[in-house]
Length: 365
Length: 168
Image (cartoon, rainbow over all chains, first blue to last red):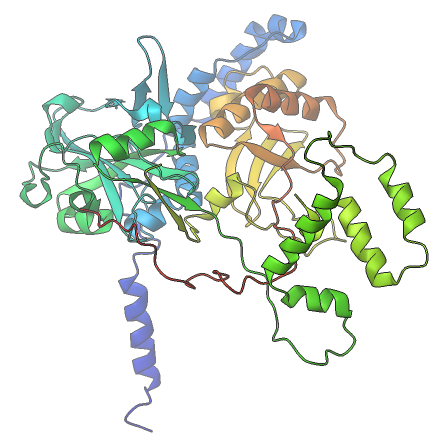
């Protein structure tokens, strides 16, 4: 009908609208610029190496400094590699709805375990929740007087809503490098990945502010232990402040359940610890027919039997060989005995006894 | 003790299931090479100009890569293609994999370069860093006959448990 059917122009316009409403493939950060090194400079370095490193190479002892390589790669390709990893782990998809950014600042976060040891946060490395109990050390190199915002979210941890996140830490209006002088909008809470749900991602994002921003609406009560208050959405948060703030750096780690998570639930959040179990996809059972054509009757009927009856049968078979006072004796050469006893029996019974001896199907302990 | 047991399907992220070897792998390419039955595949490519190590996901996305042609690495090497380059590339690549949270990777031995010294040296560097070469088998639930007529079989079947707590 002409009232309902859209013209070609209308359909194009609708397509463009839906494309625009998605934030997909939009760079919301700073432009990516790599420092260019000229070919002549490179050749000079290579020539120098040929003289200096020859002795080491001949002895097979040339071991380059990995930290120096890491520092040098920041100006060349590390930013693209970080972007690639963030896309792989779905960080941009889940936090910014598909919009991405290339990191400008190398955000270095590390957790102190003891006086000497610390666990750094890179881009997806595995950390235990007990190691994240204290506020981490944050470092990034900064030019002059600038204001920054640091955010730590957990996109996977929300217990009720799949699209919401929990806010673990939010510090705003940070002058330069000094986190302690920033405004604590949300106090730090230890990571609490729920039992049975595998690895959760925890993302640190550093925003560069153009000016002092009023974060009145984003302030939470000090040391909140209310999960409802900590429910957060990075997309909405950034949408409100996008005019004065640009994402400039990120790092993330993954964490799995640990005993310290129980302490967080019991003592800090004041609730019982939830636990989950992985549910396998249920096997498909077609509707039972009275006369199934070309189906093996024993396997077909077993499929639709009550599990209680099957377990009862298995238990009775087991109890035949068990004596309460004598020690258990496993028969010697069970497969050979099976072969002898199976002679002359119908095929379905042979199959059943073979399954029992091999401990397969319902006889698996 | 004081815990609720909720049986729920929790497809948080495919990465989550990959760590537990629960996510099914791409099995349909049984008679074709190279095989696609992996989560992460390690490819080592020593060419005349450089040595490359790439860790790809089965979706085709490159996750971690390192090449001796990268200026960040090349500026510290004597040559971009000799054995010492391979040794150092292996160390850099292993460090990058660990930082990205990679635990194991599938390595296809049916390649021309499989037995070469450079490849061996890179694999050794990965093993020393703690990354398992070769992925574990997928954990599949074995079929057991019978239907539970009294309890739950499918998601959503059955009543909600009594010990439900409202999160404040």
